[in-house]
Amino acid sequence: MSLGLTAKITKPITVGTRLLCDDNSGAKIVEVINVIGWKARLRRYPSAGIGDTVMVAVKKGKPEMVKKKEKAVIVRQKKEYRRGKERVRFEDNACVLIDDQGLPKGTEIKGCVAREIAERFPKVVGIASSVV
Image (cartoon, rainbow, N blue to C red; front, side, top):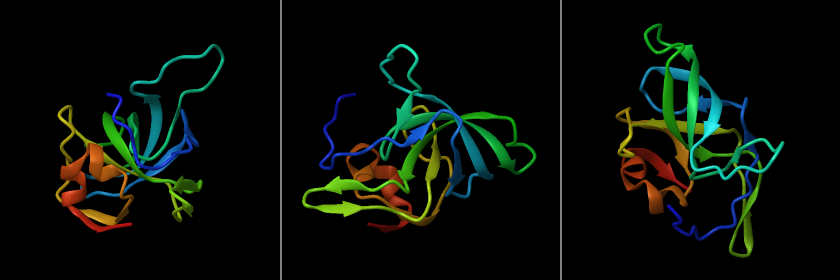
């Protein structure tokens, strides 16, 4: 899964980071428990950025969703990253729950989504309200 992104993404989201779940799947706040595709380095926490797939545990949301483990893709991050000559950053860290095929579990995304998501997850961008 070495698809090159157009931007140089910094990876500020580590294991234990709480993210806003930005879709209508039933989860509100999730916690990162693993980064999928992470290549290990001794004593270094796995980290992720925009466009990365992570395993999350649902912390707040509908009662049937709480304590469930899900896959998610990160769609926004507070830490700025470079896109060509400009720098991009968002107000919060957010993710969208996906299934094993990369399709979103919800039917709409409330906030905006980074343009880098469109390369790997076109279906996620299809249900987004806006792309930045």
